[in-house]
Image: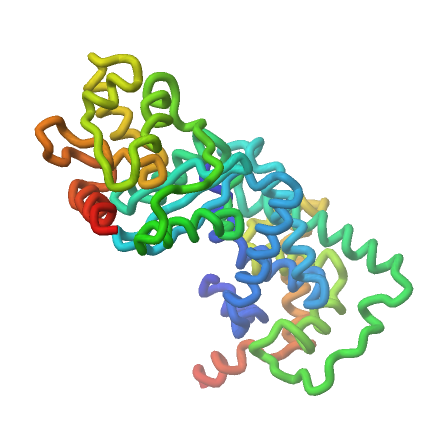
Length: 164
Length: 205
């Protein structure tokens, strides 16, 4: 079994991307911290053949649900916190427009998009995590991406421009 | 990210894939929280010294392992994961005191380490030998035979050599002060050149 430091090094960036997409910029750091603290606690008992990405995303998925519930109970929801003014630094930023576009997706689509495109999980594992069939997970990701291309239409412009 | 992702228009394609400053901050927070929760079984850091980078690793009991670069730090961490616990993080805070004492030692300002030691990586006769070594004063040496006698087994000269060669806490537990009866320095875990450097440092101070 590898030293846990290696796990943090190898998968920390991936978990951060997933947290940013699923819980948003405000809560991403808390979600990451709670995910790795839980993972480290359980680590010595992890099956050596386990798929580490899927294991970490599963923990992050649960932490994201906890955070969403806690936010829902709070008098001031994250939605009501005004966006920082002048935060127009897309496309290099996770804040602002991208998060607004992600947040507008149905939850299943957001999860499927994040777990497939940011964590690299196969649809079969995403289905195991979010419920439903592998095909449903694939469709949710495709629908989510399709919506994002209209609500956050930055990608493809360079490629299409270059192809012309 | 695959070519097909790009064709389907991956909306994340333009985003930074790594965020080093935030990851560094999150790592520090994990170190502190793991320590607080009591799940940081092994903390480590590396320090630069005149004899190369040294790996220092500690449990909550104390300093457990010191390793030279030639011993392969990655391999040593893997051994610690196997023998002690895989809950290992690079967490310099726990090793601040040790790092300071090493710095003082290598600058000739410290003649004795005052650190809690975790002896769990050494057992039996080897451990008996090693526990005695800090009694050899700074700047002095003893022969393998003398150390064997002091450990109560005058015939175990070879075993003393083995104990020194497998010392998990070199420098702090001064196996470099154990030399051959003919006055030559003999072998060393960090390499003979390192042994010579340490003995020279101690003679000069």
